[in-house]
Image (cartoon, rainbow, N blue to C red; front, top):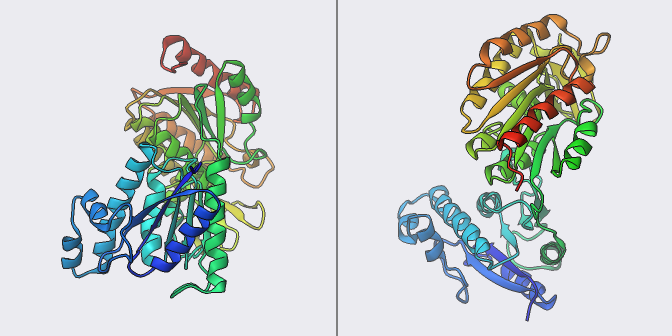
Length: 411
């Protein structure tokens, strides 16, 4: 008998020894294994639990079609689609508890899709020759993915690569044993913020919502946090969202790497989740600390938060564009949405005398928000700063009304 089962994914035609080594380590630790082959050209030394033919067929294709394409990228994208679909179906059927995937660039490309297909909380480990490489864009990473460099293992087993493979085997099994999957025992409110110094409303909202019988999950809107928030929203995991920190949307529009994906602000609406929205920190563009600030932003307000992240301000024209984009995304919603505009400021550093204070640009932003927040969107102006008690009171007033009329489900 085994307590947890791990799905092991890889190209068994070329990496059979390495994949079998991980399976042996998991088995030696008392875990079960389920093997998925994503090879195209060759065959594994012994049959796997999920064959390459089954993977290709799950993509609506076949191994023959992948081979006949004559292009390895096309072939592996077929396998990526099939592996992702099969992994999700097998997980939903209770066939495994965590996944470990091995690969070079080809296998890693598939691995990223497979991990994104699985819910948050499922242990996901990728052993890759390009772990942590800048060639992996942030939007390809699932919210809780774990990676380890496949050091010295490009071709064949050795003592160096065994260190990585055995760590991954133990880590994924240990994670599967230890993880507490989201239980959703109480209705969950998803909230976005940016740290706890730039935006502080969560310090008052969280206990107030908990007193009302809700659980609250707060996501740090610095790219990966927004992706995690969106992944849960896409699964319909929230009873309501308070999306009050939107810098990831502005960053996406400005081309910064610190964004929450192209679907930021869309998944809650698609899933029918009611949204209360405010434009917290939508006046800033965030850059990675190692980046040089582009020349076109050199005359803007600037804040260096730490060695990892720094920000410049958006000008009046750009702020109007962000207001229009917020409206566009909310108007695509299939659920109720209400926007709160705090007219005295939207983040701690935009107060008079601070680095991001730009009253003229902010006035133009507010003017554009008033123009574009049209029916059926709800729209409330509050004469306060986003970090003031009045903002919290306005959010709770809308929320309580939605609970009373059934817009927010409590059970």
